[in-house]
Length: 157
Image 1 (cartoon, one colour):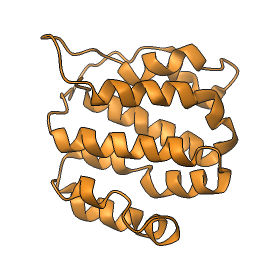
Image 2 (cartoon, helix red, strand yellow; image 1 turned 120 degrees about the vertical axis):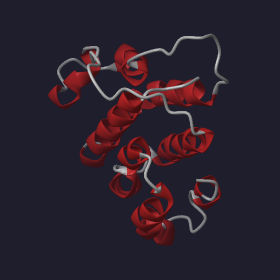
Image 3 (cartoon, helix red, strand yellow; image 1 turned 180 degrees about the vertical axis):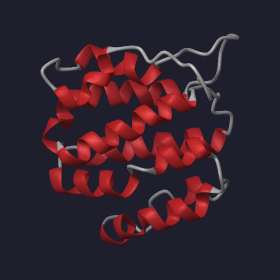
Image 4 (cartoon, one colour; image 1 turned 45 degrees about the vertical axis):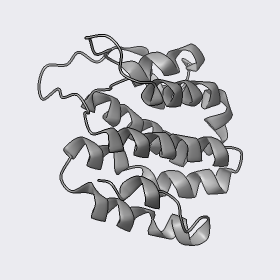
């Protein structure tokens, strides 16, 4: 399925949240799995769903978590809305979310992961030669955990 640039902003906010709240990840694991399923599904129909990330997170959202209150409301788009068309971006996002699922039970690694990739969705939303910036951001995570992390996914952008 296709997503909007605003969904990338929501993914940025989600990575940023888990960077500071890694212990909360298990609550949101099933929703992150659903986001992966959604972004890896082939496009269908003519319309583009809005607020996709938020809607997929809502069933597990804990209302007392003030830092995630944005999940509970739909974003009303007024300007600069764009559909993410670059298929390589979906591959990158899926790889990021799958890595999050893989390291979600290790709070230290999840922190390191989120610290390394928090800004990747913003860079993809900007769509201005993201390869170099992403490589720079993830290099410490690669050195510490997986030298090949995200290399094959970013080669095509």
